[in-house]
Image 1: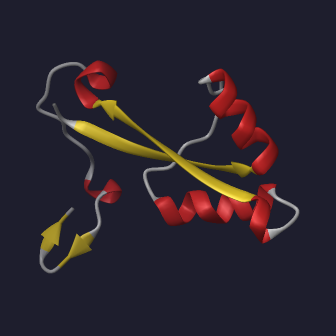
Image 2: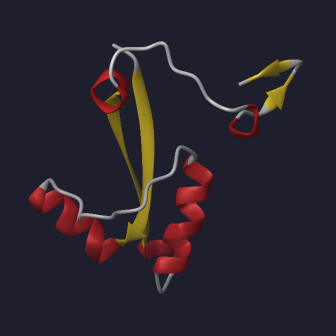
Length: 84
């Protein structure tokens, strides 16, 4: 299975609601980058201790259909001579 990890930053109160219901609200913001989600959590929270970051792993085939997958060069990061 080809999985994608999506990160969600929120405050402690919303974190508890998500865990209790097992659901995210329609239109919930996700990031493919944990640090970006962490910054968002800090903005959504009154204190650093109440900033929460969660993640979900999803089956890419369920999201996009069977591969192969293509992306534009602008969406990739160049590292060690390789676009990732």
